[in-house]
Image (cartoon, rainbow, N blue to C red; front, top):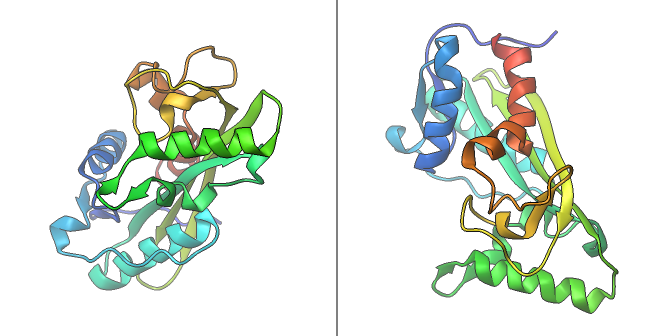
Length: 203
């Protein structure tokens, strides 16, 4: 039986202000107040997992233990079939440079690796998101989501973030980077995971 949230604030284990606002807006109709990790002065735990669920669990349980509140965390990334599922949980790591994260660099490197692999197009891929809700007593619930599609080149569009300009979701001919933000949020991997979360723990 899935454990449901009941009253009180939900700690969102992220230091990303945009992500916190997105989650707060999603939960507001259900009467669930949210508070961010930065507002509670929480450090960002080291993400040592090799799967999305492992990293999401690390962040959610650390926040729940530190605050005594139920905590929600997510881990997400892109898996590309021709690269044996890479970058996967290392999606953000591929963007790391000496001067900070640079996703143009990451997308360019991804394209170079695909060309070097010799794999023919279409380069099938999927965006993945795993949500974990953890309680202070150690219990958690897991909600995975995904959006299948393909990687294209060159980069297209300036909407979204991360690898969005090189990802075309199934059923569309535009990249996430060209897509209206609200349309993307309606169909994305995170939307898939959140729909399961709402059905399981909230609604």
